[in-house]
Length: 62
Image 1 (cartoon, one colour):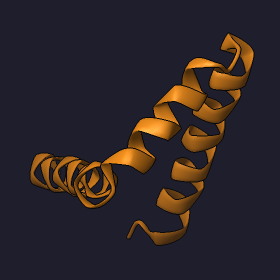
Image 2: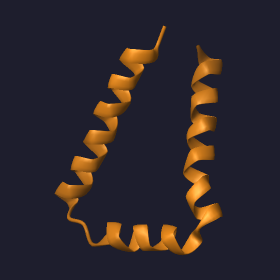
Image 3: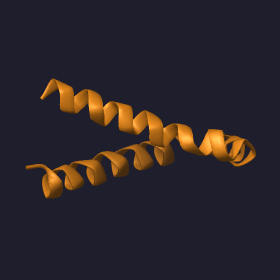
Image 4: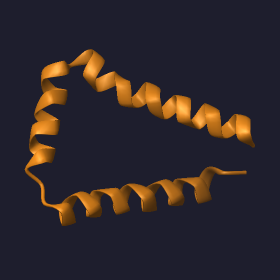
C-alpha cells in the first residue's frame, strides 16, 4: 500500500508540474487570480477537490 501511495504522489507532482513547465505565463495568471479569492472561495475549491478525489477513489479503487 505504501508503494501505491508514493506512486500516486509522484503522479500528482508530474501533473502539477505540467502547466508551469509548458505555459509559465498562464500559470502565473492562475496564481494572480487565486490571490484575489477570499478564504471561503479557496476553502470551497479545496473541499471540492477532496470530495471529487474521494469519489474517484471509491469508483476506481479495487
